[in-house]
Length: 127
Image (cartoon, rainbow, N blue to C red; front, side, top):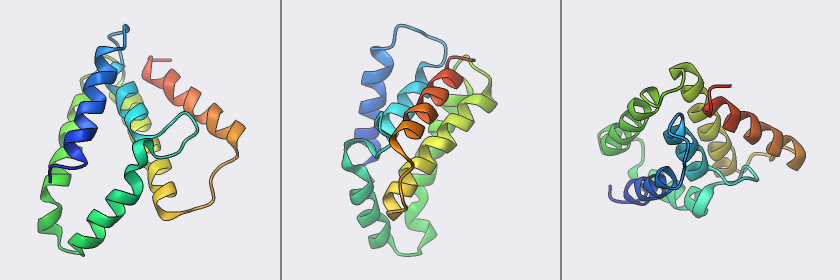
């Protein structure tokens, strides 16, 4: 499955390289690659991923590359210089925001979205 994994990895690499603070930069890159500052899916990937998953149906074997990518990303976050609980919370929250948008669930209010994202950024810094 070359997309979205390859594009997502490229986005993360670009963001990691541009982050001067070593501690937590993979976690911040994951967050920023997943959702925009408004809490919306980054780069319009939600609609494309929905199509990919629909095309795979319920066949778990076809999801193997996706499972492998998420396992690799999780491993990277756990070795990011911040408490692995914090980096995992950031990942799960980012995934939840992304999935909510993918499913078309009602978005959270804009001010709250900004505060949630600011808190996730703070968690990525160890705070």
